[in-house]
Length: 125
Length: 125
Image (cartoon, rainbow over all chains, first blue to last red; front, side, top):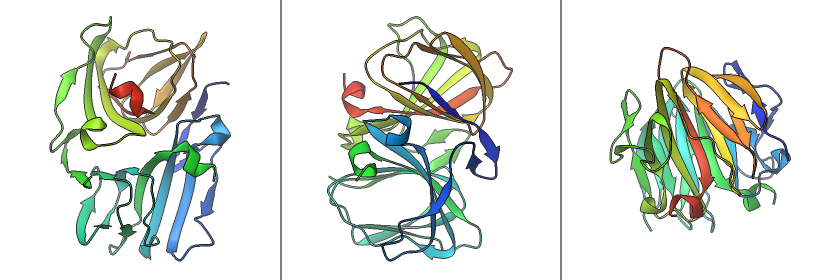
C-alpha cells in the first residue's frame, strides 16, 4: 500500500477526489460527498469524507449501528441528535454515537461543509 | 451512549477538550494534542485528534501497524512518507498506510495544525 496526498486546490476541492451526489437512493436534498480517505486509498479501518449541504438542503433522517465523527469546516446549520436539535458552526466537533437518530440541515445562506469519519466497513458497503 | 458537541472556541481550542504535550515518552519537539473524539466520548471505532507542532518542532519518526488519516488545518510543513519527504499546506489530506515510516516537521514560522484519525484501539492503548 502506498501513502497518498490529496492536495487541496481551494474552495473545498482536492486533487484526485471527485464530488458526487450522496447517495442517490436516499431522501435528502442538496448533499454532495468527496471521499478523501476510503477503501479506494486502501484504508481498512476508517473512512474520511467531506460533505457539503447547499443552502436549504438536508441529509436523510438516519439511525444505524455505526457512529460518526463530524467536524464543521464551513458555514452553519442544525444537527438533530436524538430528540433535540442544536446549532453548529464552523469548527465545532460532533460525536454521533451508534443508534443515535441524526440529521443535518442547512438553514443558512452559505454552504454547510463538514468532515465525517466512519468505520471503513460502512463506506465499502 | 450520548451524543457530544465540542464547541469551537476559536484559535484551535474546543470546549471540553484539554491540550496536553504528546506523548512525553517519545522523542519529539513542540507537539501538543487535543483529543476531540476518543474512547472518552465512547467512540470504539476511530479516534479523532487535533495536533499542533510549533515552529521548529517535529513528531517522532514512527512506523507501526495502524494507519493515519491527516487533514492539515493550519500552517505548512513537511511530511516524511517512507523514503521521500513532501511539503504539505493547509487543506491537504494525507493517508499514511500501515507500516509506512512517517514523521511531520514544521519548518515554517507559524504553528502547523492538523486533524489525525486513527483506529480507536490505538488511542486507548
